[in-house]
Image (cartoon, rainbow, N blue to C red; front, top):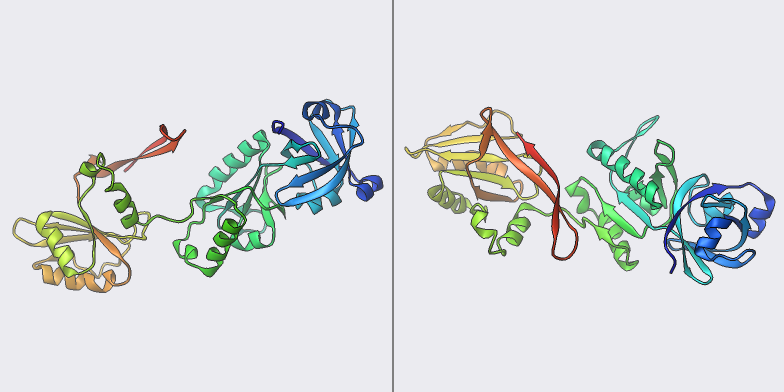
Length: 340
């Protein structure tokens, strides 16, 4: 296999190109990839393939000219874009790799909205364009239609797209992961051996079970239990003067209860995401639990030991670190954020 070379694909509207699937290739590129003049090859992209005839032209830049018909048969945009070309066998040329990011896309009259991952998607699109990786955004519905959004000229454009070599999951909704539609999508990827990153959200209890198996981490983990019944909460409040109740499928600090037990045996309750009808002070554990019962029955919760936090201007402060694995043994911190 030859190396991947980022090239520019350009459309040429000529009847000869349409009829015979002729592909004009710059001499410099043909020489680099050992592509012969007036030879028959198979041009592949994802799962699509088309027989072509090459014509070498006097051009120094890595450019490939072909018809819009050929691009359509390969499920590629019928306009100028960048992608890598590789010679994988004597008679097979391959376009790619192809990376797809699946998420929720809101379509507005003059643009699309990607919510909190807007900048991330733009950065990824620009990086892929520089490296000759064909990158597109899609949704569960668009994926079934071989449709996605590419970023060729400082704007997202809807177009036909081929099946990807790899999929990055950035769907925000935990509920959507439980749908039949999502199950069919992941089954399709498995059946077609397409790698899928971020397969699903990890819930808080799954994370705790993973971490507590590591002996070197265990001393730093707060005491955590599934809130299976009233007794589990009462036992935790006997052991700890402060506990948190967290929905195992929750995110962004929503629907969390903080309970502080005073030395006199009273209970103070603080909470997020709920209206003010819940009282904040309770004389007995029974009165506290009675107030919580209807809300705790709606989803699975963990009860977790409260730990002392640093503060900044009397507000709790914590630190978030993003680490990425370079190989099977080494990790690198790529982002660090303080959150107040």
